[in-house]
Amino acid sequence: MNNTEPLATGVTLAQETIRNWADTFYGLVPNMIVGLLAMILFSLLAYMVKHLVVAYFRRTDRRDLGLILSSFSFWGVIVFGLLLSMTIVFPSVKPADMLASLGIGSLALGFAFKDILQNWLAGLLILLRMPFRRGDQIKVGDAEGTVLRIEPRATVIRTYDGRDIVVPNTTIYTGTVVVHTSQKKRRVEIDLTVGYIYDIGKMTTIIENSLEQVDEILTDPPPQILCWNLGSTSLAMKVRWWINSERSAEVVTRSRVVRAIKEAFEANDIDPTDPQLIYYQSTDGTPKLGGSPTAATTTPPETEEVVAGPPPPKLTISQNDPEAEKPRDNSKSGTLLIDK
Image (tube, one colour):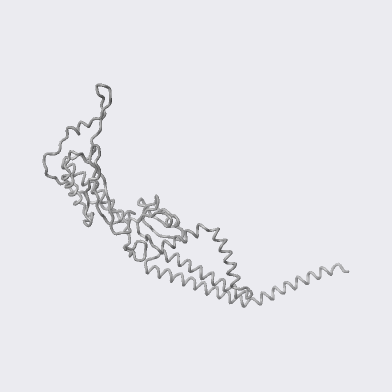
């Protein structure tokens, strides 16, 4: 047997194989052209659907939800177009088999990108239920500020000192969120103490007059001045008032109220501090508790007339200050915050 015969046979088989490949390729060229055109059409359709979804949710003032759903719609159309194009190019491939393979691949990707998918789903649920929206002022754990945007992976919060905090959506969805601007108004309170030597009625009148000088305080519901606790040396009082819900209103009113009360106390010769407790040594060497010398000799003012303190100066916050962010007056219909 000639030694060159096996080599010639191998070359012939290789040539036949390459010729079959070429014939198969040339036979698939029309299918490839149609499949490519189909993929181009589906790509254009995907971009069109994406822009339509974004435009629709922008009109309904739910931009963040539109961004997530538009991305989902875009890739959904792309994947469907890819499957259809592959069935055109390779007619022997059945769509059911491709979907089965895609399901196995999706399961593997799901395990690989579990955290990303959890955050995406949590962001979608947040945007569907809307416990808060862009412009709302919230507190999540140690993060507190104004919601800038809700992205597929995380929510961006701008703090009141101008820093941005990126909070994963799963942390927000599974944690406790305080929404400061869920309602149009909220209450602020401060605590103070006064000595027992002062008349309760006079103290209440002085504080009421001070609150009336702060025009940012809402009159409905009216402010409250409450006797809160009987201390060993002084009476604890709580002053409460209602404001517009944004952070800037709290900052302004708290500052003006504290200043107005302090100056009114000075105008009426009232010292709101606790009397000092002094330990002194007795003649037998045992410590005894005694009152402050000033507290023992202090007497209430003889006059019953209440002297009005000067009005506190106006306090404004720049519009560029993060605390001055105005929450959007959005309808809570269909959300977790709907009024029952």
